[in-house]
View 1 (cartoon, rainbow, N blue to C red):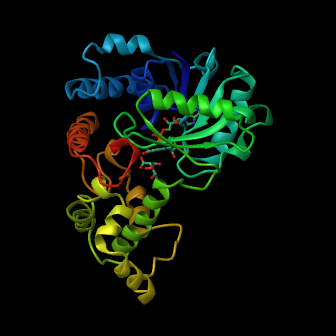
View 2 (view 1 turned 90 degrees about the horizontal axis):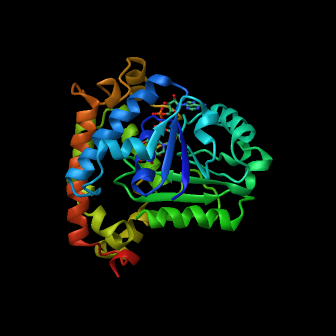
Length: 319
Ligand SMILES: NC(=O)c1ccc[n+]([C@@H]2O[C@H](COP(=O)([O-])OP(=O)(O)OC[C@H]3O[C@@H](n4cnc5c(N)ncnc54)[C@H](O)[C@@H]3O)[C@@H](O)[C@H]2O)c1
Ligand SMILES: O=C(O)[C@@H](O)[C@@H](O)[C@H](O)[C@@H](O)CO
């Protein structure tokens, strides 16, 4: 059992606290916003109840059990006191992360590993020199208690033993850490997701299709094969000469990255920031906790079906 501090209790932080608790670790959770920290309790409890009901967490995990495994702390110093692993899950703003790492340098145990959940940032230049030997990225996908992939990148001066320790810890928790040798923005899955993002925003901004139409194309077209074949096994079923021909014809040109999307900017300006705000690309009038629950139930059913079905991509797990 390790002592883990999770910094940031928002969309990812509360869920990561739950993941590490379920993994058998003792977790302290903190956030600079006391309201967010307070709300995290209810979100963790709902997620835990859904996991228990779906058979993805042990039956004896009650909210009392959770309260013992995860404690909430308004003070950063208190949260990191005695921590062996610090999971940084604060906002994706370089200056905020830099300021936090400086504070951590002053108050965290000298041997604590720091693992950033950053989606795309090269955080290593933001981390003080004294912390470099145990600095790494461990990037999770939401909800991390159901999505197993964790992208892992050691910092340029990270000691291999420190990296392997955290890598092994995540493996022991039943996760699928994917170790990359050096930082590349977005790792593997987030780069693919970013490319999809660029294309779907282009299609929407240009009025080619609506958000529901684009989602229908993904859900009823692409998504069915992906869990079984990934990309390359699907290509083998397509036939590689066709892929060559498509490439040769240059029939696809990716949209120019513009750094912004007019539709996205309008939605955010209108306060339609996503499920937690009750609306985003879609309207979400229900209680967010209920919506997370509805999503999680479906993900559990899918995950369990996938375990039964197996993939055809020759992955280690299916051997
Ligand atoms: N949302 C996702 O799907 C997702 C998935 C994987 C990775 N990430 C990454 O995880 C990180 C967090 O993302 P999120 O979606 O949970 O964001 P979020 O906005 O939901 O939560 C971030 C939290 O950090 C808190 N915070 C800000 N500065 C702080 C500080 N100095 N100390 C303590 N708390 C602080 C905020 O109050 C907020 O509650 C980002 O780096 C993001 O790129 C997000
Ligand atoms: O998909 C996820 O959960 C993650 O990849 C996140 O890091 C996040 O959603 C990013 O894709 C945001 O661009």
